Amino acid sequence: MIERCRLIEFPQKGDDRGHLVIVEGNQDIPFDIKRVFYIYGSDKDVIRGKHANYNTEFVLINVAGTSKVRVDDGTNEKEFSLDRPHMGIYLPRMLWKDMYAFSEDSVLLVLASEHYDEKEYIRDYAEYMAIMKKRECLKGEL
Ligand code: TYD
Image 1 (spheres, rainbow, N blue to C red):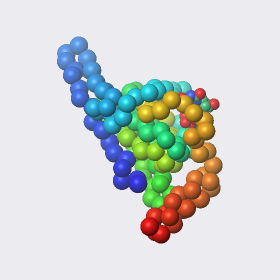
Image 2 (cartoon, rainbow, N blue to C red; image 1 turned 180 degrees about the horizontal axis):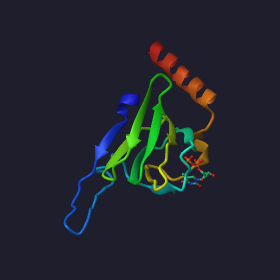
Image 3 (cartoon, helix red, strand yellow; image 1 turned 45 degrees about the horizontal axis):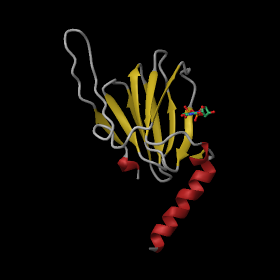
Image 4 (cartoon, helix red, strand yellow; image 1 turned 90 degrees about the vertical axis):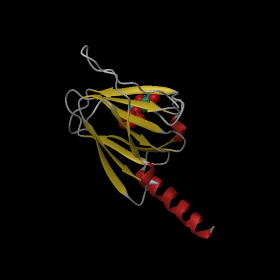
């Protein structure tokens, strides 16, 4: 599943007045954007995220500064650097994610495919691993 994470490069229409980056739902972003939130002022030692979502897909963009995201599907792990305002990382549902290494000026913009619903969050890693293991077993039985 981790292979479904991918970097997305957004169209840029900058000119001598400055940069302009375009992010269109259902076009550059592979879903209808229902929610936008952004994270800033996180210390470089802070680890955020630490959860998986049953239903929500995300695209993460560091519109200013830098951060990193580590993704884990229960079998494989991968780390991405978010360091360009015209690049995003697409995260499918049911992926464990940690965001960290925030620069002082980091503004991490998050586009989400669903409205906020705490019930669709898995915040316990052991529980996440158990769910993923069960899914693997079920797949093996098919
Ligand atoms: P949290 O999921 O811990 O943030 P992060 O993924 O960055 O670590 O969210 C922090 C708090 O904000 C928590 O009480 C839930 C709330 N929240 C909302 O109410 N709506 C949202 O869209 C998000 C992302 C969080």
